[in-house]
Image (cartoon, rainbow, N blue to C red; front, side):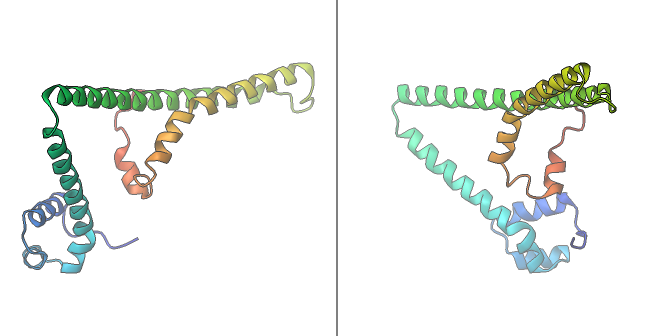
Length: 172
């Protein structure tokens, strides 16, 4: 783990914005008392990503303006439907993850009902069946969330970044 930065997140954000506005990294390095290399490591890659997205947005807007008004309306309708679907799937993933957590907890508590001296008697066998059902349901409920994480694995590559995404006020 590297040394903590002597700059705050707000200062790094300011440096990133100013780089995007065309200021030179060397000038900003002198002003903020950090090396040009440090700015390059912390900001330039993200600034380039922002520039790339901005270029994509310009290209999309240019293509959008070439459409007729009715085609623009259809495009916006499709976009809204896709955004709504993504929002609903994200919510479903969160609810299903909570359901999976609860079911796994119930299955774990059911384990205490198994008689260690006679783990295969009729009562223990029924309990094991219940545990299997609960575990299978928990695993199935977790699929949407796991798929969402897999699709966005680069977000979760750094544990510090993933921690920043956690809801500080979870409802479940």
